[in-house]
Amino acid sequence: MSHPRQVAVMALNEIERKDTYADVALQRQLAKSRLTGGDRALATELVYGVVRRRRSLDAVIDQFAKKPARQQALELRVLLRLGLYQLIYLDRVAEALAVDSTVELAKVQGLGGLTKVVNGILRQYLRQRTPENPLAIPLPENPVSCLGVRHSYPDWIVQQWSESLGIGEAEQLCCWFNQPPQLYLRVNPLKTTREEVQKSFLEAGIEVETLPNLPQGLKLPSAGQIEALPGYSEGWWTVQDASAQWVSHLLNPQPGEVIVDACAAPGGKTTHIAELMGDMGQIWACDRTASRLKKVDQNCQRLQLQSVKTMLGDSRDLTQFQESCDRVLLDVPCSGLGTLHRRADLRWRQTPEAITELAQLQQGLLTAAAGWLKPGGVLVYATCTVSYPENEGVIQPFLDRHPHWTIEPPPQDWNLPVSESGGVRLYPHRHESDGFFMVKLRRRST
Ligand SMILES: C[S@@+](CC[C@H](N)C(=O)[O-])C[C@H]1O[C@@H](n2cnc3c(N)ncnc32)[C@H](O)[C@@H]1O
Image 1 (cartoon, helix red, strand yellow):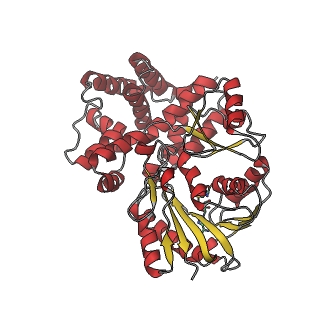
Image 2: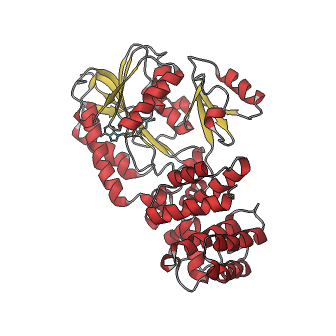
Image 3: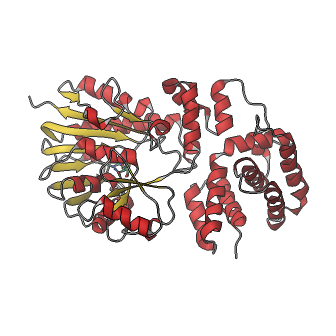
């Protein structure tokens, strides 16, 4: 039988050695192990936690080890991060257990000669930490770097947030993304009601809350195995964050219309659009990634929706929809910086250069999609990031070049935070859901 800490070390070593995605490495090691229940949850928490807190953990190692973290042997660095993560962030793990299990892992890993080093660094950290300084290190004076080290983010992300929100709210956002994500569901009204789903969850001993402003929305305290939840195979609901649920409402699709979802996979919003249309009309779900597009078909099958057809290809090259659509959804590929809590390694993988490239792709998609709408038609542009370059930075130049397009803000009684320009920007720490931007554009009739 494997031990959760051993499984975590194997996954973390693979991530360091091969730059594997954290979720891929973890799933691979979990599949090889026979871990269940709480042990599985602990291995998961350790892998995602260590990946997420890498910058803070390495700053502590730099303070107490002879060599900085980056110059140490990979296996030693991983072990020290794992031990320190438990000491700093996991209140439920006793200090002695965190230290002893890490020393034991050093032996199992064939690093027996380093047990004294591991033990020494962890114990030195414990002696130096205080409630006021839980990392036991001097923090940088620069406020952006200080948050970056304390909450474990690259400076450029903190800089971006502090420019739009101020340093105080940027810190709230940093803290929010370091918490485990909550699970939101969207009930399929063509199969059941929200009350029925709530009842079935309560009968299974799972507490769910309704989302006050989203008629199909439910919130669960934690995930577990999605497929095992009541009503999954019956197509009663779909996993979808609260912010993402607003997007299809903003599009406001009507039965009988022709709709293109230009970046559709895996179909979270396509299926929502079909539900809102009573599955009557024609929805084209387009995407350039075949493996992801397959999931749209699978999701439509599970939810028993008939009105969706999938189309593989680069949506910038689609010519067959010229001026023929009633509505278009453009849920563009983006940096995903509004979903950092869901992907532990994303903060380390994303770069400002990649965002500049994404913004060009987003502009290309918007220009192409605008040509598909009939006069009077509606286009909703959405991203799961709150950063300017991928949002207003794309929309404003489009409006400057297309004077016959206007922004339509959502109805006031939706109580959404609408910016001066008419876009909706949902901040996680304010709205307790993914960071999202969405804007509704209408082509004038004349
Ligand atoms: C944010 S995801 C879409 C999520 C989806 N709307 C949902 O709610 O489930 C962006 C998608 O855009 C696709 N994509 C990226 N570039 C594209 C392009 N040039 N043409 C079509 N699809 C593209 C990606 O494969 C990815 O599936």
